Length: 392
Ligand code: PHB
Picture 1 (cartoon, rainbow, N blue to C red):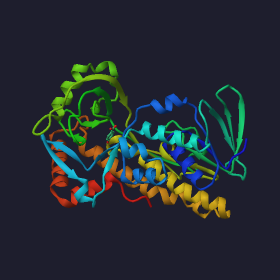
Picture 2: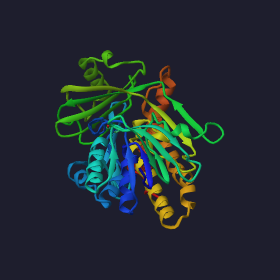
Picture 3: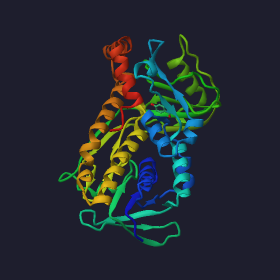
Picture 4: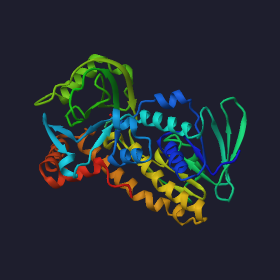
């Protein structure tokens, strides 16, 4: 088997790159270890930056996100029991975010790739990637029927998520530096059958810990609670979850609406960046290269931004043989990655309770939130970063 670009992973980065390359007349094959049903059913975060939505629309995969996504023109920061609105519309000149779950983006991309004759191999496990420092890389994989196959390609995309195996091809210490930060907490996520509790997302700082009120549809809501990282779903009964959500969020202008909880998950929490994001003909994108904590809702958006850069660089390479833009990939993509790292860390640090933190730390946090929400400059900084800066 032979193609121009071999793509490991059918997540946002892999599928979006395959789609963008197709529009530029470049062939790719996507190898994905999970089944199509798994990829399309795994629940992840759900906030799309304006740039991401614009790119989906401009490239012909935005019909459903336009129709079914919910545009949000602001968010609420809640602290001291009072809500403070960050008005994206006014602060960013009419930009907004769209709440549309990541797996729905994947459904749309898969449908479009298959309609365009794209080659996505679900249930295919990559066993080796070889020759990325030479001219003729190859990817060995076991396909869904158990047969051993080899895919020859000119360029390889490692887009296999935070549990990546492709990142390991970049030699540690001599070439690769991993920058990682752990946090002493996790998020407990629920899906509940209930009407929306709020028109906009609520990010709440409370002495018991952070809470986030989000939404999926008019009848399904998505909420999160900061919990201990060793907690499991069995530690949290439905009553305990609702009682904690009410304690952390209810107050002036906010009243959480209870409902039947039908999904509970504990989400790990870390910041991570691998530098560089290229090794020879291997390029890393999305969570394979970097992970953000979910507080800034940047994960999918960063994956899309990575492959937006790569698609252009790959198109130039295939049209002219010039590798200059490919070799500049890390230097082009990393400043945006680090800005998103800073934003996600900042939102996290302002809103979560650090275990062992005393009265001083909590009051300092409240003062920071007061500074940010009181000043137009503070609100604008938050709004610009939340809706996302222009792609490049
Ligand atoms: C979500 O709806 O899943 C969500 C929203 C905002 C975040 C993180 C997750 O910051």
